Length: 363
Image (cartoon, rainbow, N blue to C red):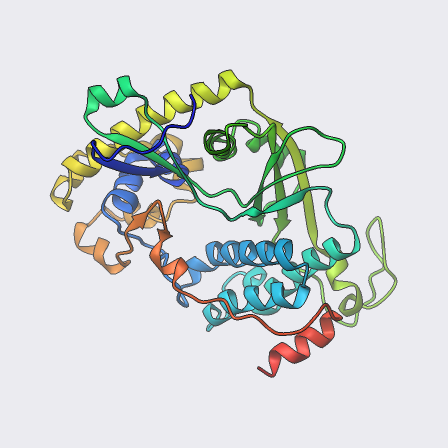
């Protein structure tokens, strides 16, 4: 479906893949978070422990984007520090999310890129560039009386040597072990499909596929004990080889056919129309008893990682919903809190990490 300019004659509803994916997992969780704007973990910047995983991911995106633009480790680490460090005001329950460990996980990725850059070369104009494009066609709009605008924000669009066409790149931070089993989730990922589709709508030439830049959030070893174990021992104290134990892999390409892209579009329209009905019709907590709790049928998946899991298990008391916070989700902005922090750059050129750390600690 070729890109068509927005026409202001119909009401517009903005949708992104975060809403679509959340809605398909559980309509109750999706209605609370995206329809009404409530949150349990709190998506705003703050010292909430449950927020650190998400916040580290956002900070890593900032650092990767800065690296793609400037190729400057100090600037990239400065952006990571500015977004993540202020939130770690109390010791996190998970040692992976302490400032020292998170800092070194990010630094390891940057130094690995400096030593052996990935083959993917981003177009600077397409680094964290938001896309808004028409999702519905004329016939679909005639049935519902509104237009759906899909918002996508690929982390990057670029090219690889010796390969024709462009590709999207999505950066993912994860506490899971990075292997081919982890990577299989992206074979049919709606997020990757939607980015390929949206870029194609805007440019008129769709990307050939997508890559995933995976950064493992692992607990890095430390101390004076020598690294003498494992398949590749370094035979130096862990304090000296700490960054070498970080995990990062680029997976792909994940390809999509034209037929798969159009099938995704039709499925996305159907999902979005259902969500919009709930969002515009069931607008208060009085409707809570009528919302399907789909996640209960996939408790090991949807419920396991849901911010509403404890609230649901505790009886779904409406009075407790307000205790988590209210942070309306706008597909054009995401959670407003996540975009309210101005990243601070640390001035300087590429320097050894120890020098950067010393400089950053004295700012």
